[in-house]
Image: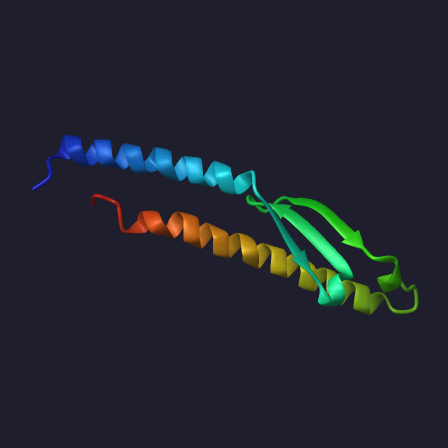
Length: 99
């Protein structure tokens, strides 16, 4: 049976590893695109919007709804990529907790 001091050391080690993974994720860019790559949204791993780009052919004053839909699609795709990467990076720690 593990004593309390060893458990605390292991928990501190895991905490440092988790913090490192979080920092790596925050420093990573995640890009989502709409259909035909007409709208591109880029976020950092901590879900901060860095850029959003529109191809000229998607900008139509008479069809704002399409631009809105494509923007939502690109943003949601990028956010989904962040969630997937976070789950892969941080989910690995769940089974390693000493308690």
